[in-house]
Length: 261
Image (cartoon, rainbow, N blue to C red; front, side, top):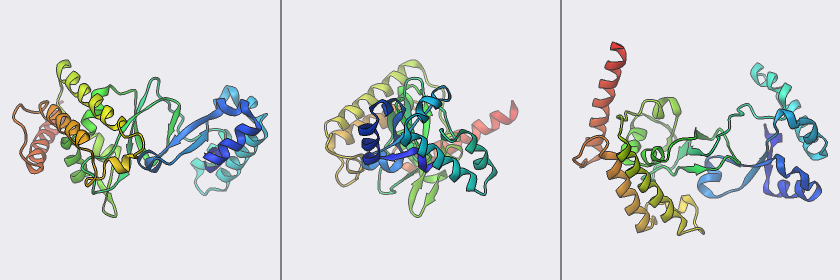
């Protein structure tokens, strides 16, 4: 896989030699790139374009490097991937957009930074991804209700949050919500994104440092928390303990209903 990943300097060198290679390059974003603003890129080649891509010497070398690396692996699945060494293991792509959720995030943060990314970005396996989700879902993932679930049922890497699809996302108890509530959360999401855009010089690591988080961003998140919590009940929750108790009661009810069906 490493052969398909490019640093910024490698990307620039490739384009200076072969400007027509631009159609095979996408941004490559994982947890570190997303949160800390680092930049990496990758080669993204569809099957029907393989011969055109291999006509570019740099890309042909990278494909061959990837093929040899996969054949050396002790994993049979990786060996089989050598047959399509111009591609990553996962070739899923969004139609319109995708939500990125870092798999590991500092325990100091009140919220795990997550966001929408365009289809021209490939998300690495150091982050989770939801393809073509409705905007309100991002608000749920940014909420205190979701974070208390992450802290309780999610794993840990040292002391940091570890977000996993099966442990956290798939088990999170969320009730059916009407269109009006979805619209309320969507407006809160847009406000959060607008507040972030006021600080283009800052990374998400800086914006979500609990000691430095801008007041406008804090307020936008507070309003989002309230909107998400109204999906569960009208009365606001007073503590994370109260939120967690409510979630576990709902989870037990959902499991019981599944068994009955």
